[in-house]
Image (cartoon, rainbow, N blue to C red; front, side, top):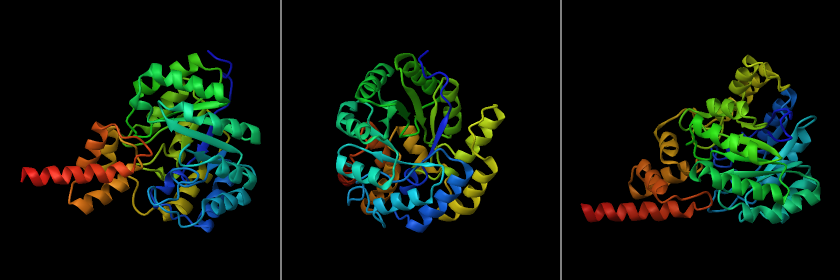
Length: 342
């Protein structure tokens, strides 16, 4: 086992970042303040705030934000008394310039995210984050789509670039518990830094997978209040807290207060119930990036297609995060093929 064995479990609440996908990136400053105050009062460790696709994500391709994310970050920092504000950065979408802006506004943790086979593109951003004095974490997305050996190789790269932890990121909600166990165990045995886990609930496995990750020694854990995240959402934070309490694991976050935040503050922001419906189920089944769901539904309407067919085809083509423009291409190709068949 590595030297991180006695590290406490630290939770990052992602409803104001991953949840941005659910509301089409339309969060207001007041909504952010209200949610952050509730989370801060409950004792949440980190609160992630940025466009759903990370810093710089407000574009036509990924979806335009209602409010500039820097204003949202500023609002979040101003509402915190104990919690730290985190941001996500995907190299190629976000730049060192946005990272510096976020740091200047008071963001204290950055998660630098790459596809599971492309850790090398994170080196510059991690180096800059460490130079700025930010807590710096690696985020290996679509972790189900690469062999365990490749995951270990890429995590070691991030460790060499200065990452203080590396997350196994189940972006599609496709991993099963035994696959999570295998991956966390491999990283714990191979790294000298902390291991994290970020789940999606598309196969109804998020809480179970997170518990398995913790059992294997993951100490950086993500959750989203009321499952407010892409697809069917992430590990539901208040549920996870109740489970951890039953397991005798104290993370110093007030369960009742988190329940109240979920019910009274975040609940009214939901455009619909975060249940597992056919679209999100297919995401997990096909192994497709969770934020693709809304894009696939829109493309389905445009081309008169079942969004499930689009998602299955995207899975077959192994399309990854950052290739949202491929969704229209795939839909157009499927529509053309259907016309020929008719």
